[in-house]
Image 1: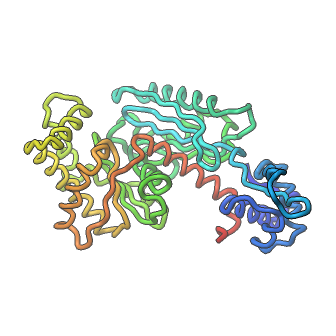
Image 2: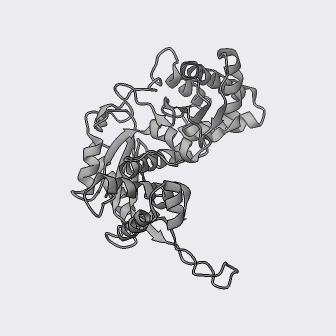
Image 3: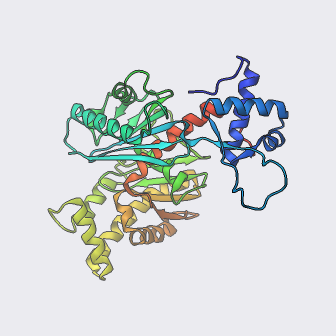
Length: 387
């Protein structure tokens, strides 16, 4: 769904995009305010607003309370961006869960469906479970059929994913390797269901995007995101954009033998032999709070190994912030403080380090944000961002 002009001219579409971009970024405007802020003539703005209302991109705000004091004369009509003009779908497909999220064009979440899955589930059955979650989530988000079209869909999953959406390599989900996840999502949604792009992207990269959007890194242009848990990895955002690298493998340092991250996490979990990951993590940090010296040594050893990888990324990128996400982030300052302490000895300029606050919703939220960026580019790509 794109902005349509009353005539086929590029100038007409550009003017509509300019007006829509203004109310999108700066809130409700009157026609007079639109003309003043965009530099377009009042007649152009009057006609443009009529078209944008007809296309459902903007709505007229209800008049102010008639009992409130106001200036004499009829109040000017005000128009705001219609966040309900479309929806965006974000899907997180991991080893242990599938999380589908639908949001409006302001990013307000309208529906969430979560399905827990077995890490050993075959690819075909995982795709079926994904389809069920997506279908249920879209149905739950619909106020009325066709009223709010789906304008973008993004699937996030572990592994190296190329620009076309194909999984080049996925160690956590070996059967995923070779699949084109964008095409699989398109098949699940059905022909013509999405009036816009369908994308696939690495889950850690999208978790980083979510942190910049609604997490502890809100507004931070350059950051490194470290995923620490049963799987270790990293992602980089530069100038507000996730950095993919030539093959989509940027940040894939979790398997680097020199860091030994995977074995480091296993060593920490061995604090409680033969227990589940969640139980072991809970126990070691619980004992740490109780002053247990053995627990402190286990946590400090893991923090030192984690800090080594953080230092490598930080001294390469020199980011404004490093975020530690994944399951280990639930420990908060109990893991962040020893990481900070070790970084003092490892970095010329130790970066700020914070724990993620988004939990296991971060990947799906990042997929939603990535989808919104696709919509914004289509709507406002004709014009520079207004200031």
